[in-house]
Length: 195
Image (cartoon, rainbow, N blue to C red; front, side, top):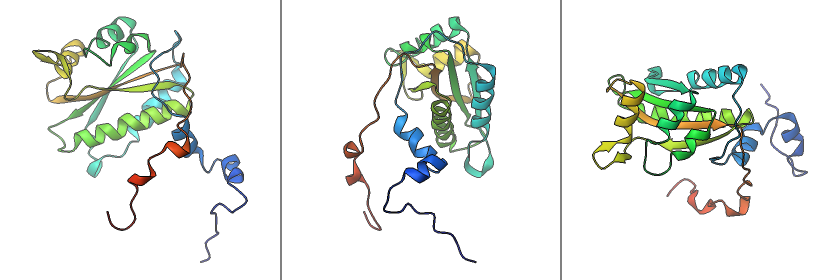
């Protein structure tokens, strides 16, 4: 069997970009954390795509220990925006917050599985033209005597065995950020064959 050589030629990558071959790298280049949103609801069709993307995420041994709470109620988004002393207030202006939870009784690697889902839904949101931002919840305080996770569990009625990894804010961006230039990437963090 002869395999076709589909590698980019020295003439450039434009033919592959036009064909969609590099669509994922284009999404990664464009994705930035967006914390300002327009006051616009997300259409049902886009919500269905976001749901499908989450449910297609890979997990260790196919256990799927995650659960996702889609929050679009402005009052609840306002409450969730108070989950942490810093770094969550912008959620009140988002069209959607996706609370990413993992069942610690089903998998010892629920953190990894929920992290995969968190970034996949952000990339899907980017592909759909939305802005997004990861709000870290696990191991973050709400106050001196309460964790952000406990606050969210109580606010949304999430059982104690369902641990909260993150909230992903999603909405139509009201700010734009330039892609990080290629020359600013930390290529020194790449090693070949040995550390």
